[in-house]
Length: 165
Image (cartoon, rainbow, N blue to C red; front, side):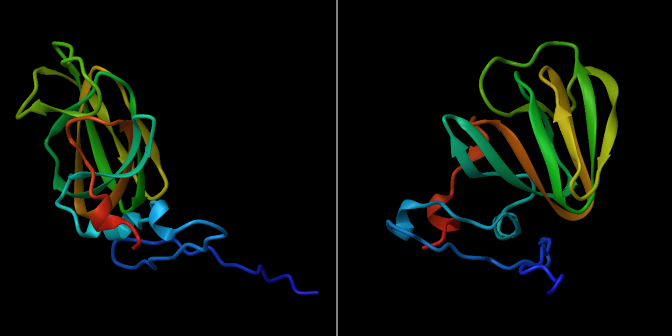
């Protein structure tokens, strides 16, 4: 009896990934959204928030983290996961509440507030991006982030470019 698993898990990265495919039981390929987050991030500008999953206004966005991002804020909690590489997330408690609205917003060049600290995310680590604060990412080497949020003005949809055809 073999103890070897039938499948082996291999983690992708910005530098090395397999696109993958889908196997349909019924229906047409064009009725399904399928993309590879590493491929999407590799084709995106740094910190462009590309939607890769959408459900009733909630989105999963992939971001290519490279260098220092602008300051962002949000009127609701968001979550970020590092799926490739390391990134620092700096937080500010804003003096004034962010504008109401859905999704991530720019917080300005240097938002007014007091530092709350930072977290260092490595592969697989997740952090809460609390409502009412400002945050920015800093990555010394390109890496990939997944962000769970509500669809907003900074959410970019590229379905025709990123989905399997």
